[in-house]
Length: 262
Length: 356
View 1 (spheres, rainbow over the protein chains, first blue to last red):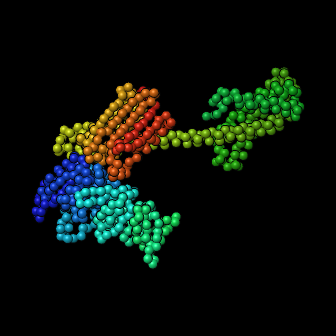
View 2 (tube, rainbow over the protein chains, first blue to last red):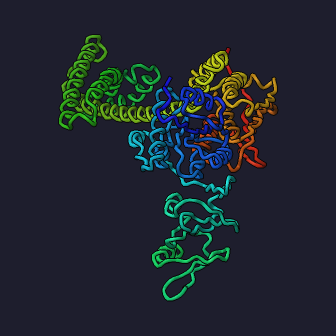
View 3 (cartoon, rainbow over the protein chains, first blue to last red):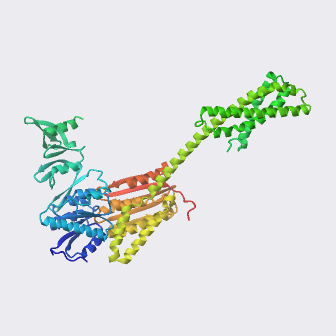
């Protein structure tokens, strides 16, 4: 049994796994830690996003393969300051897990020692956050990088959240994305969805053969571009099949021309 | 092994091939060495028979000096020396035969003509011997190319066998990891259930072991395998996983390639049930008739589910195995609509032989 930590402050945790037995293992390991309070358990991605948004826990144990949303999509829709420990049977996602700043990556079947180490790391991360420090880079990332494989494909959908509700935008339905301060506006099927993400990070995950950054603040679906029109003295706009007009920078124009002329 | 000596029919053919040479020899003896036609024919045929056997020895010299590897000088040396030796033996034989014939009183004048015959025998002897050498080299080359082809064929067969075995033996490791995690959970909450799951998992693994060696098993055995697999998954997924089985009894004895249906059921769980909050029914139907066995697996799925990396691998595997085993006689259809994913397979109805 571990002694209660000196601060006496409880850490509120959420367990997310579609298998009851997998949650049970975590529950049992956590029962030895009085400072951790399991406030909720979720069995699918939607539930997880709703609970995490509402409860804003400090710590989340997150399975990767689940109904509705996978663990990465859940993480994408979470607000910034929750520590996440992935728990999965698949070793293939480890690199990606550390890229999204997960605290740790536990493999099923989960051993007690490994679990304790992950929990310790999470507590440190939470304590640092409380003190306003920047979290250090995950120490085992390089180690795991040697054995794990990077994701081989671009996502085929983008999850967005409105309050506690989750929407799924299939990538093929996305017309364009526009940067707006800390958010991006995603336009699909005549609807506008806001997401807390930078346009650069969205550009990174989209298939470059289908999407192009035509402007500092705009990414466009190439299939939607109907024509290019001059705008003002030396800039252009792209007119989409939906009728929307997207500003195109000079560099963006050159790239777009090259693709459209091909 | 000598290619001609070890086979009576080939030996007969070989000797027949020497008959024209015997006739040629008789002609030469009569025309160039001044023998009478009777003397020449009586002499030439036994001599040819003798020389046919002497020339058989050329094969050993050829085999010991492979054409591609021995140098040309060495080849000339060896075979010329052997040809001279063979001719020498032949001449001695001819002398003995002539003496015999003379002493027996058939051709008293034959000994006088022998000095003219000896150069002729030496010439033809060397020539015939070298012809045999030539013949054996051709034979060895043909043999070598046939052997190479057989080896290549065998290698191809072995590769395919190994591939098939590997395909069959694919028990998904994540299934094991997840099952072990479930067992680990049960050890403290429900020890009896943990034990039950260990036993079920053991049973499933044991059933899959050794299946890689078999090319076919009775459908009944495949069904037991599927039931063991689902029993384990049932503990993991609880009420979310349900099975609806309608298998016609008369089909159970027909043979199927091992682990043909199990990967499909595994897909149904992993890509279907696992992505559904409420889970669903996996329906397995087997019918037989018209000389075919018809199998269908259907499961609900979430068309909007997060994409899974492995999806499609299992299906491709099954398809390849069906094609390799049955060719055109088997067919497989995959369809998905109304949130149902369906795989239908038709294979010829065959009985498994020598299975207990």
